[in-house]
Image (cartoon, rainbow, N blue to C red; front, top):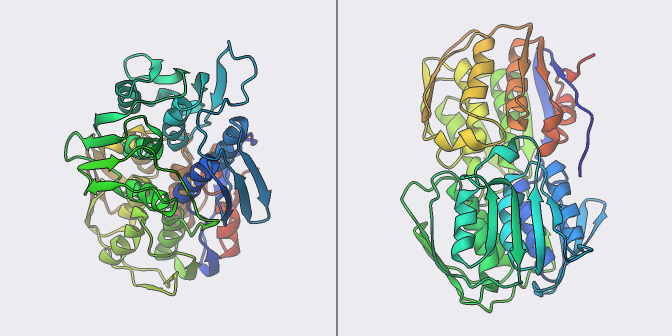
Length: 443
């Protein structure tokens, strides 16, 4: 369990940002590479993200019997060898083994079908807002596969209990992907081990966060798993396939986290280069196109992005169906853009680490922003934000980082409870400082 002392973040206005910084490694690719490596083989994961979410995943997989060793900037993973009927290290078999997933929705949804493939009794717990998030889609899908699983209440919130004999029958299942794509990704990872194989059909055409399915497919393809798919409408996986990952998996930079650095460089005088950003399956690489549409000039070549700001940004309309993690920083950018910015198809972002519709809007309005919202859209007008304020993070790492970017432009901003940045970008403060930013723990 990861513990870190809480702190408030003080952000000062700066005259310029200058320098080169390497993008933090992708959390999405790191988590998927760990889970695939733990299922089978000896895998070296180079350049993994080591954050609260990924460290919680590492500790959990160790508890279930995998071996994971940290060597400098790499992880050496020795997995189960495709023997998912293996009994985990859970002590007394008559009691429930407690499985802690921290505040990671991805880890929660990914571990549930894996636990169903392990013989035992499990009680899955988490912390903070994850305990209030709905899990009905994944629980219902696993019930349809014959798994004895039950969450709390109608929405199957945490804690979730699983009593497993080590087998999943599989078969056809229909998934509603209108709130998250994590259910589909988690089922795809477990599908090769089902008794009958599986066919996953998407219930409607409102599937959100589609690129995360592509990331899952990308990692499973590396592990020699064959998935037959019809776009995002259906996915078929034959049983009996062995996960056979390669010996090395290299994790490149995370566009979701790099977006905060890009946004900061667009708002203040800057000459910033962000490296290790490749053209992979990450949906948040869309941030480059969005910033260009808003009027930023961005040089993107040789796996790097160079921005020399500031720019006179203009408001645009942005479809956020596949880029939920960008909503907080896009809301900040909208405040500095001339005219109006509209963020739409955002209803699913209300069920993240915080309500990413109302909470960023609330804090930006505290700074003087003109924002109107519904459960599907945010309308943001060009606003003169006020300095000298104290705002709340709502325990959301991306809200902290978005507000910090605003603070660099307006100055003298205090963000309460900023510890949560360690969930995805532990080096956020030090990276910005290396570029000349003035921010740190409030005294």
